[in-house]
Image 1 (tube, rainbow, N blue to C red):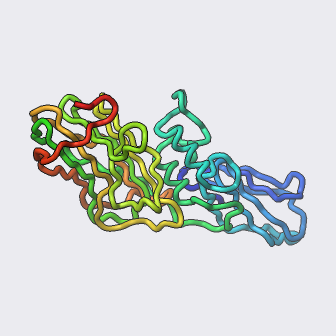
Image 2 (image 1 turned 90 degrees about the horizontal axis):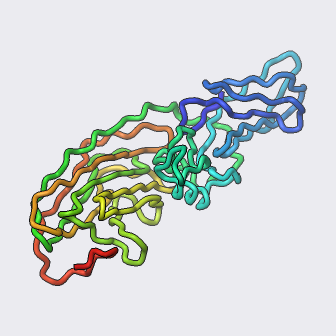
Image 3 (image 1 turned 60 degrees about the vertical axis):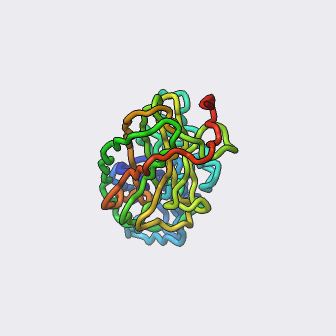
Length: 310
């Protein structure tokens, strides 16, 4: 049997015996396969599907009159360009097509690692968990996959702001267990608030990375703010050999500047907290939007970018 990380349908894996004409098979949806007419002797078996590192088992002995049964194998995902290594080029492919689906201008089927017709955090985490991995991989199996659990986003936060003041919002998780990636989408009223840029050296407007995922061990594939529409989007994964993170921590920190005196709502519209590839979302006891009370600045603030100077 073969398993394919991040998928529930294991069909399409090519299993072959190199050097033996016709000794090949394609897995069924449950991962089963059978190779017929393999001659007696010692062989090598390879299992491969596009966008995954192929796995190889050597010293497979076939005896006359007997059926040889191989142990199960799990194929590791993330090789978007099929060059037998998971590296920065695969991350770039994911990044350029992130949040796209078939028919979108930036759709790239190579970025859809788990073949679910969407480029999202599942694909990003597959690259992250297997980062720097090379083929062939060891012929082995992972623990059985679990159902994916969706978290309900917290309720919108109603805050009162005073024009010219600063407002800091943190997305914090409590008692997290082995997180490996996160994504979020937040909305705000652009007539009342504007996000201050956390990285003046880069084009566009970005938010601040929290301490939950170490900058040295992670890759941020999406960090964008649309101050005209009031939308914040962010996605991050750890990179192997980084270990999953547990406990309490801040994922992102967003600094707003109030544009007017008004009550307004900040909403977390989308939230995903994912663990290792093909595992469930780990249980988190609480996810909160921490809103720190606004106050008038004692010193003039630097101007906002992208036409938001006052």
